[in-house]
Length: 335
Image 1 (spheres, rainbow, N blue to C red):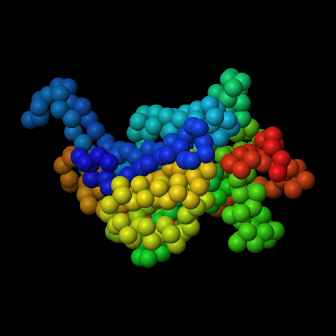
Image 2 (image 1 turned 90 degrees about the vertical axis):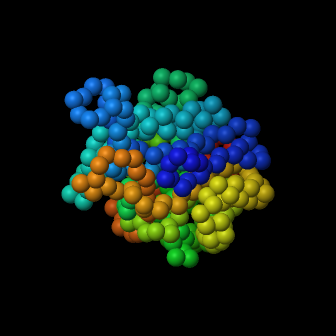
């Protein structure tokens, strides 16, 4: 946790108890408008740095798949590409008012699509990375708004006023079956289809990526949690709510406890969690504010995208899968 920043957030990633390597990635960052002064006639020190009056908080979790080296490469490449695009596109800071909200949401979808294309291109050129893919869940917080961009089965939760809400949809075949009425909701978690993903970045590229985007209005006291399925396979919403209430603003202890709980329950997958307690103090500067440095975020509900899911593959096509996140084309193991 950066003590020089107003961000109250912590992230942890752990290999778990069964895997030999960790294919998960996470990122916590504060984005600021800045200007490096080299020469000026104004009453400013040369070579000084000015920070604008608004900043954003960026939270990312990615869970790679496709084999040990390929999965790690996929999640790493996805996060690297996101950072590169964010640092080189000024419109991320220019389109943050209500008048440009729709355009900003479209740019978020485009960002995820660009990352998807980047992974497919590398996999095509490197045999050892064929079929590599990654989930990606990103939360971009500019007080009092939060934009959640998502593909896969990593999750983003909002904990507020004694309630825990999952803001993302699991892009798994089990969830499709539940939505279609072919499976009871209570059977979803234990289904063999719960680890089979139909929508990820990269993969075999048979289907177009669907970027799920949601906008939320934050409130003081909110907690935002992003995590991979290595955590959610062991921790339900009631347990998550209880731990958030137990630790309050101590996000470091909260993150440690969540990882320890998943490891203690079996830890059969990599475990990654990011916790944020956005406070909304000084996050958004007014037009008359002097240049300065600032922080972050909080939420409410306003859904932007709930795409019509593409036609599910038939159960005949889907034979059997390993007990980990996989894609419909990976059929190397049988039950």
